[in-house]
Image (cartoon, rainbow, N blue to C red; front, side, top):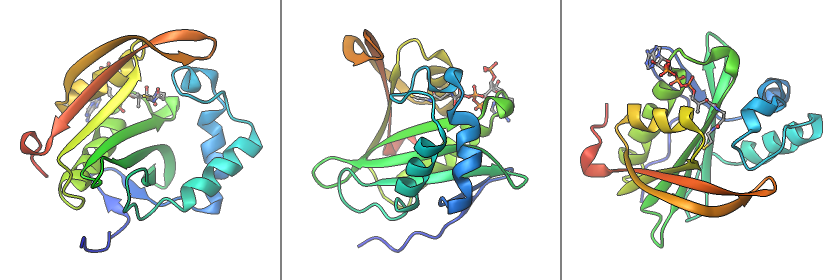
Length: 184
Ligand SMILES: CC(C)(COP(=O)(O)OP(=O)(O)OC[C@H]1O[C@@H](n2cnc3c(N)ncnc32)[C@H](O)[C@@H]1OP(=O)(O)O)[C@@H](O)C(=O)NCCC(=O)NCCS
C-alpha cells in the first residue's frame, strides 16, 4: 500500500499543485491557442471546454488503478505556466504515461523540463513505477526534444497509426525505466 501523496510538489522554480475552480481562465488562456492544440487530441478550447477540463482534472489527485491519472497545474511565481499529467498503466498499475502542456508565453525557460522531471521523480519514487512512456505526434519536435532532455529513449516511430484532425499521423514513443532514473 502506497503512502498518501503529499501535494503540492515543489522544485527550484515551480509549484505543481492540484487544480482548483480558479484555474478555468488560466487554462483557457493557453488551450485556446491553435498553436498549443496543434498536436493535442483536442481542438482549441472555448470557455466551456476549459470549465469541463478543469472540473475533470480537479478529481484527478489520487490515482490508484490502471487508467487513473494525476493532473497537476504548474505555477511559477504564482502564475499558471502549464500543466502535467501522469496516467497509471498496466495490469498492476506499475507503468505510466506522462504528458505536458505549457503556455507559449513561458516557453524556452526549461519549465516543462523541470516539471516533467519532478513528475518522473514521483512516478519512480512515490508510485514505484517500472517504466514511464511519452507518446506524441512525430511532428511535435518540441515535445520530442523535451523527452531527449529528460534522458528518455526513443523506442519507436509508428507510421500513420493515429487518425487525428482529418489525417493519418505518425507517433513517436519515448520511455524511461526505473533503473535509468535517478530520483532527485
Ligand atoms: C512540449 C512543450 C511543453 C515544450 O516546451 P519548451 O518550452 O520547449 O520546454 P521547456 O520549458 O523545458 O524549455 C526548454 C527550452 O528552454 C531552454 N532552457 C532554458 N533554460 C533551461 C533550463 N533551466 N532547463 C532546461 N532547458 C532550458 C532549453 O534549451 C530549450 O530550448 P530549445 O527549445 O531551444 O531547445 C511545449 O512546446 C508545449 O506545451 N506544446 C504544446 C502542447 C503539446 O504539444 N504537448 C505535448 C503533447 S504530446
